[in-house]
Length: 300
Image (cartoon, rainbow, N blue to C red):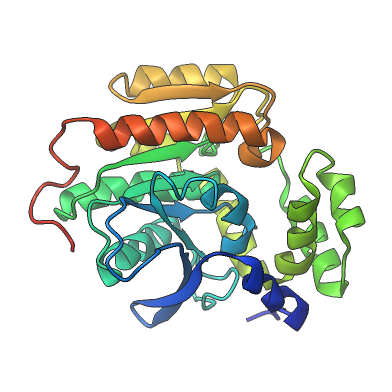
């Protein structure tokens, strides 16, 4: 395994996050989550947030904390990122199994899943598997999932670009350097990326990027239970207008929403717009009078 770095200055960031660290096992792996529960018997609907390819859980704090009046966010450090263990395998299947391990391990009652980018692919497949395993969910929100895959256009960010950013982070980068790549981001998010990107395992990024080309979102998208909403940035190179149209045609029962003024990094590019749409979607999914996805007894 290659070196992962989480320095003390990064760990100190957790002091400013209104969540507690919790740990769950997925097989032999130890997965870390940030749980925004107010009490041990918090009755808010859990929202399990699955970040993207190079985003540790703390990188989604600015989203989670703005949703706590509606839901109980639980943000996952995906395997090989943040404080979760590294692994020998980083397939979409592995990631989806991890999500269900968190749902059952934390006994999340009728949770919603929300994933961004890589996390959207993971959340979609996890929702399909939850239905097959009769693990009841309330629904899912898939934000700008990569639509690349066999026979499709490649993922627009190259592996070399990701690895160059990671190498800079391991050497010791700054928020100003991050801003050169992500000038539209809020300053705090640039600072967090500078301190936390080095927590990502290179082999996790490499394997996931390969998966963007070898694993096809459309292989399972139509099977995602209908309590799902597909969200994309109107300026995204990852979900183009044509891609959004294909997704709508493949799954007409799903909900769809776009975010103006946002590229692929939807929440970072247009914070108020993305949060407003996300809140509307969560309220709608939580209030629908439907049989929970997966049926069967609640996992809580």
